[in-house]
Length: 467
Image (cartoon, rainbow, N blue to C red; front, top):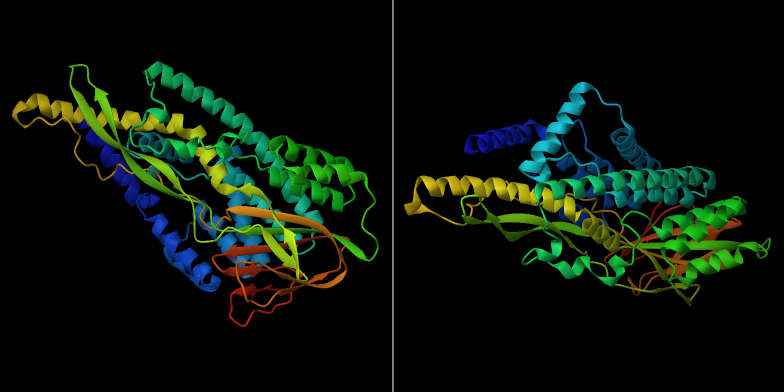
């Protein structure tokens, strides 16, 4: 057993050296990158992102993060290029027909990663990240009044949700069957010292799953409605209501679908404000007792992932339009989606982690039998034992929305996160229009054809559009 473990460790180390970058400090890298965004310097954030990813072959997270930074910077075309690259990688990994060598490497990465550490597994993105990718791409299109382009990305969102549903159903069944076969009966609630309450929060349990976003379906309804396809808009609104039956904001859209449209001098305006950052993933050590066949009980200190919410952006629930207060409705939370995803993934994580605990305990048990005078019933520190902390960090956390009729022409818009900052000027000239804002700390990023490229004197309101 000891020789087998050493062999596996050697293989994992070789995989690490071969470019998998399993032990890069991703959280630290992204903290530096997001600090630049919070200070109003997207160019600096982009520069750091490039510095941290020097290899010619980029990974999925690089394209996730780059697209988000470019979107904040206002370079929507290049943001789409980055996100299209991410989308292509997601498609290839979901529907791919890989070469024999690719299959072997992927299998090795997953197999050895299961045994040694989840960070050795290829990062394929979490389900909610894949769904929000095409949602964010649609928002880029809507910022340019390209409803047809948004429609295409929204269609991909629906298709991806259906594919994920089929994949997850098979995966969860497989994990359950393997757990029964191996005798693993541990639940996350049994893990001593693990913050169980975060996974059992009411907002987390209320979600149907971790990847379907009611906001994404509402956005689909609004897009179809703007294109005059009310027969498709209604199902979008209904799906949003089904996912979030507690939200009158979605119900109102369905009720008013058949009402008269905006007058010739008016616009049906959807204001989208996205704030904060997706939560970070951290690693927590948990003692796990392993009962060996010879009666020894060895405690293995193994690691499990936990979500750490971003607190850099103060909460707010209203904005100002032409000096009048307008309520904002929270329609999506990436923190809740990521926690629900982690909750659903925990059986598989526990299965892999407890297997690693068994291997480590077996090595310690063998040493104890060889030299009882130096016996230890706690496994030695293992530098490989650390939960996977990779995740899309620049993804906006909270999405808030307001829908109202505005006269066509110029309007002033401001948020309470930057008190005293000069209001942003928007130009409404479409029958249906989407206005997008991104808030990080006390910085407000705006982009799209509706905004003038001006900034407030104190620099806290950053209005940009790269052409």
